[in-house]
Image (tube, rainbow, N blue to C red; front, side, top):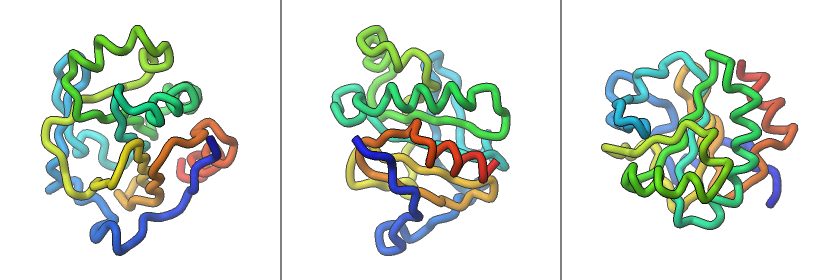
Length: 156
């Protein structure tokens, strides 16, 4: 695995590159069943990862993501959202098989949104406080790389 490319999404691939927090339709539940939308995280830096327990590249990057999350978990200015379309019970049943997953804030997607459309998983987005999608990275990566930490620190 290599460090991620910290580059903006291709405009041809994503027509909209800024989140309208008022109209965004992405809804998701935490593993306890509490419902959230992106509106809950307006004015925060967002680290959003789409993945699945059946996806080997997704699972390969999870230990690195857990390290990155642990670096910032006490910082209220950044929110980490690990999203899956799988049933919540499937995710819950898988967590004991992968130690790194139990430390991540994982959510079950209820209603998807075209804004975060992707051609494959894992896909990771980094969004600034104003809702601009600054990074879209498809494929597994070393998310605990110092380049990512520096990038996030500059956003904060």
